[in-house]
Amino acid sequence: MGRYRNQCGWFAAVLLVACLLGRQAQAQQPLVEKFRLHDTIQPVTQGELEKAIASANSNGAQALLIEMDTPGGMIEPMRAMVAAMLASRVPVIVYVAPSGARAGSAGFFLLEAADVAAMAPGTEAGAAHVVFELGKPDATTQQKIENDAEAFLRSFVARRNRNTDAATAALQTSHSYTAEEALNQHLIDLIENNENQLFATLNGREITRFDGSKVTLRLAGARVETFRPSLRDELLGWLVDPNIALLFLVGGALLIYLEFNTPGTVVPGALGTLMVLLAIFALNLLPIRYTAVLLLVAALALLLLEAKFGGHGVLATAGILCLTFGMLTLVAAPVPEMAVTPWVAIAVSVGFGAITVFLVRLAVRARRMKALIGPDALVGSHATALETLAPEGHVLVEGEIWRAVADAPIEKGTALRVVSHDQNKLRVVADAVPHVPPTAA
Image 1: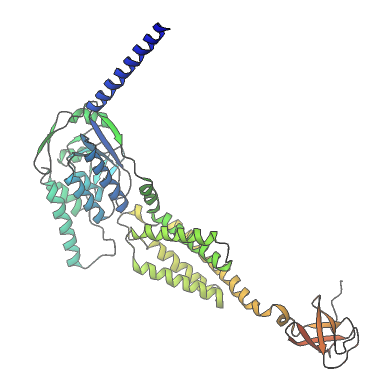
Image 2 (image 1 turned 90 degrees about the vertical axis):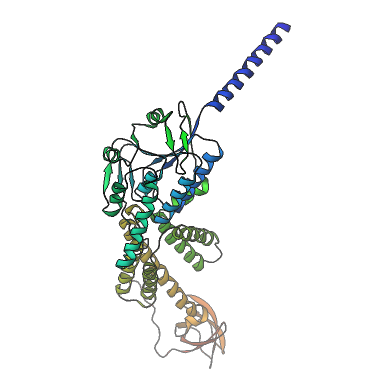
């Protein structure tokens, strides 16, 4: 028994030493945090990158690796992302990968702002000409904006000792570069097949930070930890797709309308309100054209007029066309990937238009029928005396038995006509033209 206890004690001691050595080795192993930017550049990706940089700075990482594949995006979020990269205490490596990826438009700015700019074979970068989100301004304003973007690009490209002429060519003429061309033009620092080769090449290399300080990269055997966005960021990244936001907006509006027509169900109204609020929040992050919003309002007005007054389909067709054009131009997308897909706009417009006209017509018809419920609906109807009215008795009208009163006694079986009512009591007179009920053929 004692021998068994000694063996267990030795085993526990060896296990403890192994754990301590493992932790020490892990602590000595260099850490590289990795952020995947495989999306358009907009406020959500800006927030995610800023959190990734903060995480790398607080965790003592050797570097932050940004694996990029983006068509570009909005100017203001890009500026904030560049500022965060330049202010990072940890060196930032931008790697355009895998093969087939690109650093287009605003992504080109991020590539050039990095401490180390790298690309995988078969990738491209450039096409960074300014795209105006809210329509093309006048010539003077356009020149100011383009010159401002060019100066912003030169401010960090020159400090990184990269080719400012080649960089500004990507901005002025939308020139794009392959990985080999970018390396030859001294826009990037190296081309590597994968991140392991990238780390091996950079290990021991001294780089100059944006503030002029020198840093030697220690990346041999680096432990890579991928930054995971929060649930909120993942939800916003999904909602910021204008197609998803549009579907949420339309679906939520229909659910709210359903709640108004069937009050007390609660669920459609609550769910619809949530969907509309999420859609508005997501669209608020995107550049919206207000002329498109006016088209959507006009479309809704035309659909309501068609449903209430009827326009032989002309008003409905005009409303659906306004709805389609409004949805297509709703987002002033700087890149096609941020625009509303045409088939989504057409499908949603036709579906929403048809459903709106149908539901509003039902509501209008029901509202008009409310005045014809009960005794009001029986005025002018034919009736038959079920007993002698002297002057009151029961009559059969529209298959129902009602209490009725006549001005003079009426024999049983006499054909009658309802002329008015006093609450739930009908007033009848003898029908000059006897009502003949239809008989089966």
